[in-house]
Image (tube, rainbow, N blue to C red; front, side, top):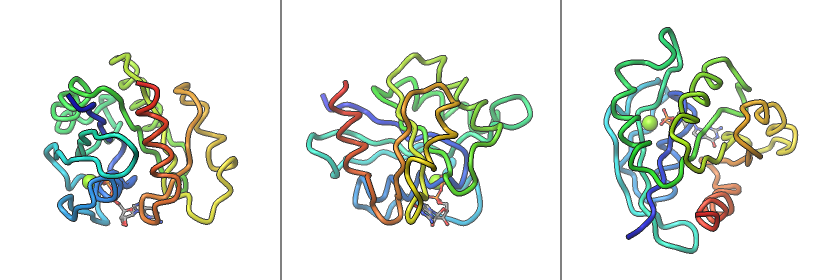
Length: 162
Ligand code: GDP
Ligand code: MG
């Protein structure tokens, strides 16, 4: 069966924008305010060289108790059923403590993880990536979900390593 790739990260980092690009749909709701995608959303991956399923999630705030309890349930299910995890962070905002909290949560699942530094269009990718090495989840890849930069490359890299 097709591998399942889950998109996780704080609200507003661009998960739904990436989902729409990967599935070439307009189904995910993209918004300027956080927390809109409350439930998991599934689509067929159409970017990259092999078929896969992609799962959009509402995101983890990484606040207060570590993981927003409202979001943790559906994100946990998505992580449990995933073969690989794409962990999105915001390259314009930079690394914030909530990202570290989420990284620690993701680590518990012991699955292949690729950190994607989103919103990196027009940025020096090496520079955008550098601070996110601190997450301890390997080499980040700078992407732009909105413009498509590096998206197919990142997906193919993850799929080729499964
Ligand atoms: P989600 O909450 O993680 O699903 O984030 P959304 O996909 O809803 O996007 C949140 C905001 O970030 C929206 O205003 C998007 O247009 C914007 N956004 C998403 N991807 C990019 C990107 O690659 N570059 C820029 N500049 N903005 C982006
Ligand atoms: Mg969303």
